[in-house]
Amino acid sequence: MPAFFRSRAGRQWLSLMVLGAALWVVGALLQFGDHLAAFVQQFDAYGADKLVLALAVAGTMSFIYSVLRITDLRKEMVLRARAEAKADWTATHDHLTKLPNRYAFERAVLAQRRAKVDEYSEEWERNVTIFGIDLDGFKKVNDLIGHNGGDALLVEVSKRICAIGSADSVYRFGGDEFIIIATGLSSQHEERLSRLLIQAVTRPIHIDGFAVEVGASVGYDRWRQGEALEDTAHRADLAMYEAKSRGPNNYLAFEASMHDKVAARASLEAKLRLAIKNKAIRPFYQPLIDLKTGDVCGFEALARWTDDDGISIPPPVFIGIAEETGLITALFEDLLAHACRDALLWDDRITLSFNVSPVQMEDRLLTSRIFKTLTINGLPTNRLEIEITENALIQDPASAAAILDDLHEAGVQIALDDFGTGYSSLAQLARYRFDKIKIDKSFIATYRDDERQEKIVLAMLGLGRSLNIKTTAEGIEEPRQLNNLIQLGCDIGQGYLFGRPMPIEETLAFLADRNRTLAAS
Image (cartoon, rainbow, N blue to C red):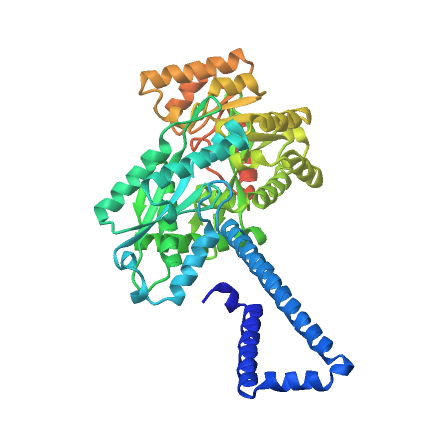
């Protein structure tokens, strides 16, 4: 049935036509025309003929008007249908890549729930595999070539993905995440498609004169008859994030253990939120020793957390979760405030060394948060030393420079942590002002057994002297290492040889014992 007759106006028009035809038939059977002619003759003197003519003309005009209105209505319905189709397409497609979006996928899921599996086409009776794809390093490329360049990159990536899988089965879920629905693939073909996707995405893309590259992580899982598509997509996502955690350009099929890992992480995240709220994460302190005098010149604050079950959670684990979930700011402020209060129990000459994560360097309010914490807790700025890794400086160099300048002007000391393990070490020393460089413990552990490592350590120490920057050697565990570093002119030492991280109560006893030892010698 045409769309017009399915509308209310169409049904009304059709009803009137049927009613009119029925009345015409009844009138013909009852010889209404003869009676009308007799009526006109009988009342001719009163203008009955003119009245009948007027009614006939009025009826004809009404019919013509109705036909015109029906024609206009049909045009409006066509235009409305087109507008609705356009609006529906806009709602279900990504405006940038023109691919179906998350809403289109949710609609497919809804359609699947309403339909029976045996009513699907033959395509759905074969193997159905859902692939989750996420780009690696897209943010860095976006920062390099700007948002317009990033958009151009996403368009090119979507074209490459569609060249491998049907465009109707490729979805963009927002940002740099894509979903592919593929059918009829064996296990070997699933792996092959994953490799092809990674190869297609990682080929260099030329944008505005730049040859840029991004990586890709792929996870996939096979749809099981009778389950919702969204469940399969969720498992593909879990596999994709597991692949991403193992490094760029990896692919993985879903395994049941991934569910357990996610559940454990979710549980740990909930515990972390509660621990931060209850201030259960405490700073421990590892001593920094002046190698020229033997005095304790500072303590580095290190976060430690033992949960309610008595299990010690490694700092890289809970700090990583805090960075990913946005809890790092609250954790940082709480720990810094705690450490500032503890530092007031030490001699004024002893500094507090505190680490700032790369994620925090993207916070434009970082300096104000630090100054506010120092002011509230009464610790002078010259007793605080902020440690920053080289990797933290490459995300936004201009912002990092502004933060370091503000801290320097206020009297806070800046140390470049894990020197030699990050990006462009010499370039960082040339661009930013540092008061200290900390030689990573990986160099200290092996430099006496590896001639090349030894030369690198010597070069670092010489670089520090030439730039008038103090050097700290991390990871000193043996007297032999200590003696060699003293002979080489290293300024400060840190490691288990001097002391492990300890709570504030033990630092006071450690200082007293250290002072007695030095006085006795």
